[in-house]
Length: 398
Image (cartoon, rainbow, N blue to C red; front, side, top):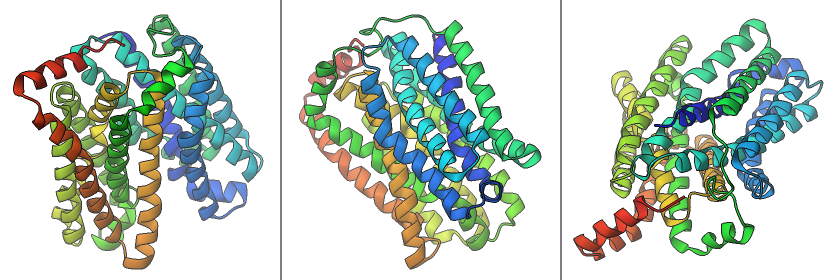
């Protein structure tokens, strides 16, 4: 596996750590900026909306720039956003900082994934994606608790300074460890060619499946803390350890899916959705029983967000491995986060803390339904034609 693939994971780790930092420092930031906790919550929403809407626009602006300079430019923008967050004298400036970092983060995801695919042999692209996306999993496992610890000990501004330092380290590693690529080699090229692929209906269906997978998962993940304390009955001091266990499950699941994503893409997605539906429904039914609740929670960690490598392989095969396709895919994933967290919150208001878990199970069912056209298409082919098609898609040049 090329060394650059591991280097790109460091950049994604920095981006995800910044994204999650606000969630762990809400009381401190509210006090420091003189606003309510709910207003701090809007910073999380602003980051997600900026990722979803602004990321593709930033990628379009970079479409004629070679991949490595594009990555360095995005690091610079992301660093500016985090420094602005660290020194923000007021809430509006902090909101601006979160929008800047959200836009740069989403575009970085798209370009980094495209570069990782282009640097890897066709038969191991799913594995390469899993390595790059381990930056996302490790951000969940380590980034959130570390930023919360630093912010709690040294003040919330220190957490953003720490992310800024991590960004500089990731940028230097990228400068030294990622080779120079041409626009065609890195997935950037003519704008019309980049846009033409979006006429493919199969691509939109694949993007929708990704939204539903992530929406189902974040319906639960967004509200794990109150569910585990108020329904299951764990003390609040146990929640960080449970979240670390959840993060560890995502790392394991990401590794397994990465190994299977290239040869068994649709089967992995279908199996993951079915299992996630079962775990979410089980969590909803048995959330009051600590052992079963923890098993269900870990199950969601194993088969939820960990579907990312298989999701990316599918999108690239029906679309292309270009930066714009990958960034739009990341936007659809972010849209899933927004759906899961926002609709889950509304469900809690109307039906209680178990409602987001049932919502997640329902979204998983919709995700299964979104795979049915692809399954029908695959089964309609003869075995020989299906094998040939899989080989062609797996070997599609980047």
